Length: 411
Image 1 (tube, rainbow, N blue to C red):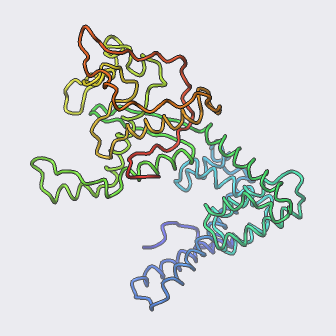
Image 2 (image 1 turned 60 degrees about the vertical axis):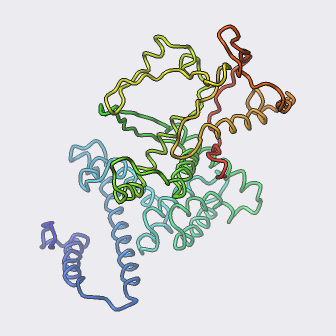
Image 3 (image 1 turned 30 degrees about the vertical axis):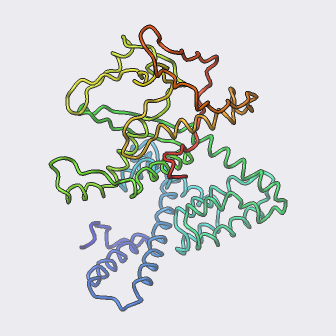
């Protein structure tokens, strides 16, 4: 493969002539890549190629900064440098904006980071994490202290990934502040600001595909995503995947389908949504208002094409006491309803009626073994005891803890 660009070979600019020479060198390297390497040289070659790629990225950022100062985007008819870069390099507008911001930061300061990036010692992701950490230092930090913190983070960038470096950088002030109370307060403030920004970016969109499925996209805080991932991973554990083969299907096909982890995770997610508690919602929303217009509005077509009415919860056939929790149903991943009921009981015993308040209500006495089962002798004339109406409704908490999904599994 030869170079695709005609870069005017007679140019005398060092960057332009160097790019031409670099493409020729890459052509020779691609021609000889089929030759086997000596054992042990693979790691060395990969590391040096990665270092060369970082140096090229650093050079590109310098050119982008120069283009921003020369107003190249405006002369070309673009709204900004990020739009011009997105069109020139065929990347997304968001990626282009991040590159332009990093190029501007490196051009206006942060000499230690720029030198490390020029030498290929750090990646652009490392550089962005260090720039953000130094910009978030308290106002009382002097310029010399900022340089000390920056140099320390550059040294750590050679040993940690960008994700790990971002977490370490929250306590970057530790190198110039001996008081741990101040360091902890600064870290807490950064985390609080990050969580608040994450909640402001939350979004959810759903699109009905018209074939019985719905495609969606959501953005949630990292903590909520970790909780969801923990539950899904527990539900799709291999020991939970023992299902009887469907009628008419071969064992090999069923076994191949069981290893489709993306499909398994989708089933687990749907199962989790179907078992969400709805007692805290309005009766019309949770389906407790009875059969009528509210229930007819919730009717949907199933995937097989049969009309399926989502009816409100009905009392258990063995009891005349109305149930206020989700009805247990068969689940591939275990009895999720019992987990949510256990979760609701645990929260009510610790939080009381209001959020964050201790409950003063004494615990209920244990049931009498000799007492008759409620609703055992229910008839039309003797409908049995009625459930007491709740005196107050608790607000649904913003974030629920991870529910216990199965008595055999503990998260």
